[in-house]
Amino acid sequence: MFLLNAFKRCSVIILMSIFFSTFLATSQNGKPVFKYGQAQIVEAFNDPEKWIRHDLWVETNFDTDGDGKLDRMHVDVTRPYQTETDGLKLPVIYESSPYYAGVAPNIKGVFWDVNHELGETPKDHVHPEVTRIGQRPIISNSQVKKWVPRGYIVVHSSSPGTGFSQGAPTVGGDNESLAPKAVIDWLNGRAKGYTEPYGSETVEAYWTTGKVGMTGTSYNGTIPLAAATTGVEGLEVIIPVAPNTSYYHYYRSNGLVRSPGGYLGEDIDVLYEFIHSGDESKRSYNNQFVRDSILRKNQDRITGDYNAFWASRDYLNDMDSMHAALLMSHGFNDWNVMPEHSYRIYKKAKDMGLNTQIYYHQFGHGGPPPLDMMNKWFTHYLFGIDNGVEKETNKAWIVRENDNPSNPTPYADFPNPDAKPVTFYLGNGNPDNGELSAKSMKKQGKETLIDNVNFDGKSLVTSVNSKHRLLYVTPKLNEDLHISGVPNITVTLASNKPAANLSVWLVSLPWDEGKVNITDNIITRGWADPQNHKSISESTPLEPGKYYTVSFDLMPDDQIIKAGQHIGLMIFCSDKEFTLHPKPGTELTIDLDNTQLTLPIVGGHKKLKKVMSH
Image (cartoon, rainbow, N blue to C red):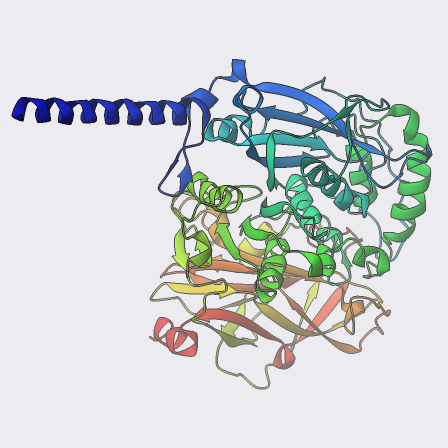
């Protein structure tokens, strides 16, 4: 009996071993695997030679190239072969872009000339043609190696008027939101896909669950937000990286014509020309009806005012229908797509009650969240795995100075809930430098600077003295000081001319690139047009000698200023890297007694008093 029972027990163990071996083999051969709340690489999905790759055209509900036919978007698909042989249905990670088929050459004269007086009509610029690149069926390889082995299908599409997608680029127009919506509708059986751009043979997405997550960087990060604002069903989560969320905030600043960092003289019509890689036979029509009749007609490089055109290209205004979860990512030292772009959307999404987190790092343009963070978000919202990501109490993840981007520090939120506004006042002392103090100083009088764009911001702030800027500096910090949030400045000024640029830098001094990274030296920046002192939608010429008060936010930041440093506020006119370049000579006089800086300091006045005590 003992031997018989032992035999039975062994049989059971063998059968159980066979069962679990079969189960594991099945998992490795045909099903996603999850560990620690994340989708794992499955060997059966990890052979690129076995991936199924094909392309198609998804029909939209708009015609923007004037041919009388609904525009179709070019889409490619990369999926594990098990979606064909085993009937496996998987969710989709989707990236769309205007850049996949190439861009215009960066030739001399492609940008607007910035060397002219404020309010003057600028000279026209070169209009380049894009030579389309790429071939079917692969539009892009982005995201593929990262996500297909983890059990996702990866989809790409070229945005309207680019690559083999029909239509016209509109740089923030409705069709750039409706195009990815159509693709997601097709993935869910609500729109038609075709094997050819003008053919009638249809394609169905029988291999997907219909759940979609979108991601991408810069313009590719804007499109997920654009799609989400349509409220399209099936788009469960978006992870935009450094997205441009408002074309006004990209090309203007508080009424001022201001270029994005690194692209002096770029404007919305230039970006249109840069990406217009679609059908050559449609370009003339698109140029006439989109570039010339919409973009150039309304962008207004004369006043820089906010108008209905810019409002229609601000995704903050379109968020009411959005329901997708949002993990936002941005760099605090991104002077191309500046950090305000992400913060304003994050704040609105949070106010709407959406599941939201934000990841900030201390570097420049780009920089996605760590892979494990993205993986957890996609795994939860697309596979439905309960990994707790939506229950996390920390909503902000910030890479501290000199830390690895994969090791962010968690915080309850951004801005830091412990940050309190502290007002700083100005004391005279220029052309060397004046004082920046949290103690009010009366009867400090007025100080004047003379605009000269031949000096860039760095040379102005590092000069021992200069008549071309005003610099106000705190005492040396005897402890680290943590700034978190959106600084604000109020400047009361008079100009000797009807128009003037106004630029503000907040810096950490001494400026020593040998010991301190340049990203540490520049804390944050801001720009404004004094002619827009009442509203960014209305500019009025300045009456020479009359004082006006201008209030505006600087870029959001979360930075720890090291002990031994000083905080400096520099006020000047033309910023060589960002603003128009009028001839030198404009005089700007600042009323010190009516000019204030507000900084969000963790610990507020109590911390500041301790940090600056002697």
